[in-house]
Length: 174
Image (cartoon, rainbow, N blue to C red; front, side):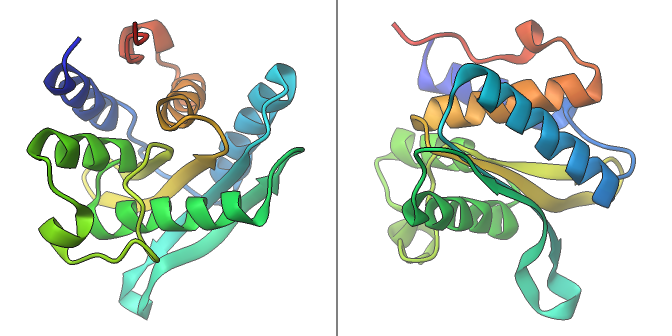
């Protein structure tokens, strides 16, 4: 698979893993599903789910769910914040943004003027999109390789949205 194939698949994930409504209970359920997957697989990750409130001047969002599992550090929390900022700013998954930049051999700073201290275009943050409304938040995982962070989020979203993960997952890298 090529970079373009991955970008096409991620665009499909973003289109098909939308919500008709999303509230605190949905955030709790999604976060709990991610946590269960992580505990079952003994993954050391941070899980962060937030709703954006740009109309209130709060682009980084209001936290709805957060957990730091074993073997994580404050760095994982910081990575999660920076990845979620990408979703808040560009309304795309952080992995899609990173792959698109890589395909063009350009950095976040060069393309968008976004400093690395506040933005990270590494996989793991995925937009929470309301059908007919747009992106209202982000679900973020940090602690694994970036493709694995992204795929864990997609797997949990598939479980919550009653979609078949096998139909939407990215292919394994050789």
